[in-house]
Amino acid sequence: MQPSAVNNTQNLTASPSQFYTWRNYRCAYEVHQPNNTTSEGIPLLLIHPIGVGLSRQFWQRFCREWYNSGQHNSIYNPDLLGCGESDMPHLAYTPSDWAEQLQYFLQTVVQKPVIVVVQGALLPVAIALIQKESNLISRLVLSGPPPWALMTNKPPEWQQKFLWNVLDSPFGNPFYRYARTPKFLRSFSTRQLFASENAVDTEWLNTLVAGAENLASRHAVFSFLAGFWRDDYTSSIASIRQPTLAVVGESASSISQKSKKETPDKCLADYLECLPQCRGIKINGRNVLPYESTAEFVAAIAPFINEVS
Image 1 (cartoon, rainbow, N blue to C red):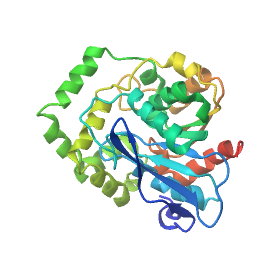
Image 2: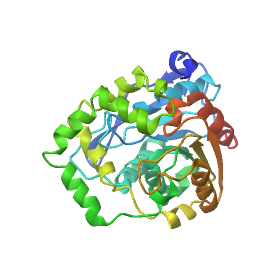
Image 3: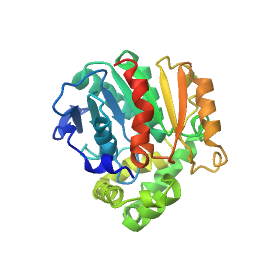
């Protein structure tokens, strides 16, 4: 817990929710600017994780700390389709879908190069976005990237479709209703996401409960659980030419049986080996570093971002 990141908001100016239309869907975003000063440097584009109740609200603590620490970059913080205030159509979402949404967002709303900061297993969305719109992405920050085994092994398509069909059935509705209860969310967060049980605070739980209130938010979550984001990204990652910073938690873990034994050092080494222009750093925390270790995460990425600001 970083008190300054939670309580001090004097240096943050956030616009109200704004909207644009993509594929006839209404998509939400917000823009943050430093208060009482002019924004400087290359803007940040934040890609939030997918999970029960997760949306762009995941980044609010990071945005506050970013400006409290004296940074001046503008921040673009969109809701992916199926999440937050964006429309929630009944779809089996893929990384390419979300990447195309963000490509349109960059082309029509931002209209300038950005530094992408992507959380966790949404890395495939950032990879697809770079492939689609490389000229508008200056640098890439990976927050808690997935273990290498998950990024280089594609499950059988029948398995992904089977899991989707099971979840997207009468069984899925009561499952999601249970998964959005504070009891489940606290237990899952403690077991899988945070290094410290005390870090699973009221702000986190209230945000997730509110974000999962609309049952239609389950479609994005079920798409993620079905593994539509899984593929062999070895060659795609190796083709990334943008300077990249990988930030891994000292207590990073995986929910996958295949990669449970992979250490944070091994995870970092794999990305450093495959990405042409990558550097890496470990900080305290587990799998949701911008929330659990906000001040340390900001301190870790600010020098990398300011190199081109």
